[in-house]
Amino acid sequence: MKKLLGITLGIMTALGGFVDLGQIVFTTQAGALFGYQLLWVIVLGTVGVILYMEMCGRVAVVAGEPVFAVVRTRMGYRLGLVTLFASNLLNLITCAAEIGGLAILLHLLTGWPERAVMMGACAAMTAIIYFSRFQWIERIFGLSGVLMIVFLVSALILHPHWHEVLAGLNPIAKISGTRQFLLYAYFAVGIFSAMLMEYEVHFYSSGAIEEDWKVKDLSENFMVASLGSMLGSVITVALMMLGAILFLPRQIFPELLSTSVMAGSFPFAGKALFLAMLGAAACIGGAAIETALSGAYNLCQFFNFEWGKNRGARDVPVFTVGWIAMLVLSLIIVLTGIQPLTLVNTSIVFGMVVMPLTYYPILRAAADKDIMGSHANKLPVTILGIVFLGFITLSAVAAIPLMIVTHGGRP
Image 1: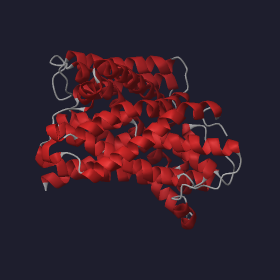
Image 2: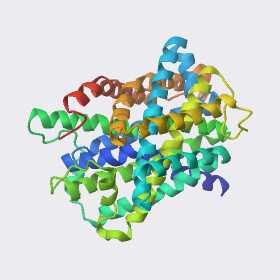
Image 3: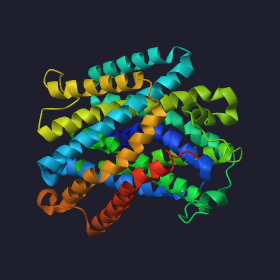
Image 4: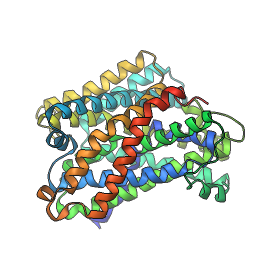
């Protein structure tokens, strides 16, 4: 029963980092522009993140090596250092975007000035991280994020055309004109990137060590990685449905976070708006905390400093200063006035560019029988991993050019 409870909590807490600001806005926008035609990308991204997350967790458990210890070993010090810098720059941009998005929602909920709630939220997150153990950080934000189910209920009540939904599983879309094709490709790469954002996987890998998982827990690793990601994917599908049902017929492009969130309560008017905002705030706040901690994890794991959220702050000084610095620098970035959605678009594209540098060494480590023994990848898993490495590399090459020619996905 205790193990079942742990798996159940793990599945639900996985939602807290999976559905973040980028996922909410980007997927709703994709639905508003292309209906269900990009649904296949969500399915592809779900398989990809399950594969990536499960391998990271398994390597952490069996070899005792979190992601950036593997990066240093497999990529060498110099290329590994470049990867560390790029990944933590990505964490910083993403954390800033999430803090900005959280401030928008708290402003809508309370009516207080946005800058004041931004600084208050950052102070509250600092206190939560400092005083809470790893497991409670996961559960507080993950379980609160389950309120995002209101988006799924709303989408179902609006009666989507299921034959059109199923048709969205076909990657051959009905697109007319070069401009529309480029937009379609940009949103395809963006959704794929948003679903595989590195910080959530790096945080998960570190969490396997924080929670002292053993080889006997590998089944739990698979269940949490797969079912937790699937739950997040179902919410992502609901976001696309809402974009297709509410915005596409009216030719509305949801450029604001508030517009996307309000879509989640549309059938219920004001009754569910509070729940939708609260669920979105929990997911976005959870993502901000995960990116801050991920930055500190990456730094300490690469340079072999002592780390761990469940250890006293004085026992892990570099780790503690690392996550505090991530939050403070992120707050400074958003206080300059840069829009959160500008930051999140940048993080999604940059995240795709960086991803091959962390995905490849994990794939190599997970397939290495010298360190993994009987728990190394089976041949079909390795083949699937190589296929996804190809998808990731192709997307990484295309991401920046597509962002430039589409002006960041502007219709």
